[in-house]
Image (cartoon, rainbow, N blue to C red):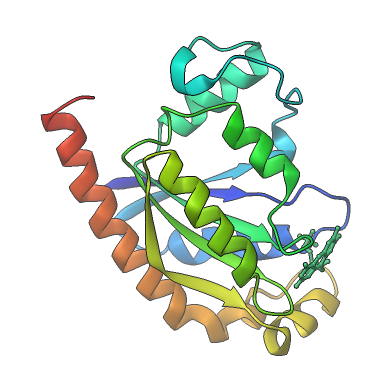
Length: 195
Ligand SMILES: Cc1cc2nc3c(=O)[nH]c(=O)nc-3n(C[C@H](O)[C@H](O)[C@H](O)COP(=O)(O)O)c2cc1C
């Protein structure tokens, strides 16, 4: 069974992101071919990047908080990054977390769930390029939450009715099927030939 982390990249007060991430975690947790863990960037109060390049320093972490993030990311065989689009990019908190780490992500697959006026597609395209630099395998299938589903889901009262996002379930299933395949294949390859 592969270990998949759902990385929630939006941290602001009143964020929609927690609804999207909860939906992803809940729906993935019904599958028997993976175990899922939420990694909420809001639970990781990280320093603003001010260190040596982690591509060289590897797990020589500058602070205990960065070490906790690194040790968390190390547990995963694959990731689903759940992200909004801010000014046609992705949140600075997410980039800061990525820049503070490196080796933890390497040779693992990553998929994306995003939202916005064009479903967060511009943020995801940027993230795919960043993930290549981290020697990850960014996957094709993504879930883009477009305004027809997004606006009612943002406006819905608490407690959030997860079924408001279920129109996207077929896309999440494709994403998960693909992610599980790659996570298993790359976990076996990493075990056979450690970097
Ligand atoms: C700083 C900022 C910039 C934004 N820029 C975009 C954008 O470029 N494209 C877009 O589709 N939505 C944009 N939005 C609207 C977001 O899609 C919307 O606020 C969404 O709820 C953000 O996710 P969050 O609530 O999890 O933070 C922006 C929102 C913020 C706060």
